[in-house]
Amino acid sequence: MEGFDPAHIGVIWDAAHSGLAGEEPEMGLDAVWSHLCMVNLKSAFYFKINGPESEEAEWRPYFTLGRHGLCSWSRVVEYLKQRKYSGVICLTAEYDEQERVTALTSEDLKYAKSLL
Image (tube, rainbow, N blue to C red; front, side):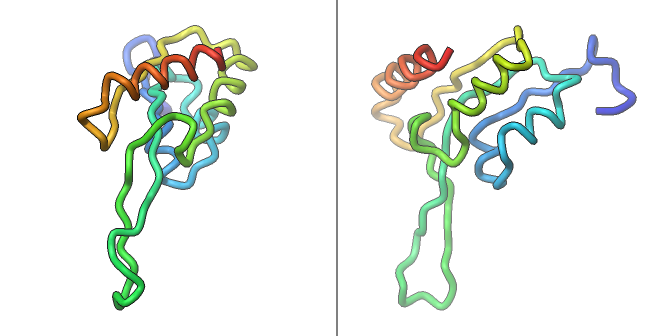
């Protein structure tokens, strides 16, 4: 983001995609801190989509509850508190179980509130 004015260009950091990339949340947030304008709290992990008889394993992301993903929401929130973040935090309500979006979002909201 070097060379861009943070008053005009911002970064949205996404917990799920950071976790899927294998990034530690503190490192990811620190890398974009100067231009951070929104934090997406969503969660995902990889699961295997083929069996052990396959020649090569195949994986796909699965979007789930905040407590169950690769990126620790508690670490994210702790980092944001330490750095006195005052920007937007968005619960994106992105889940693989589309038919349960309302219930899952409600559970994630309770979890996020407990951390904040």
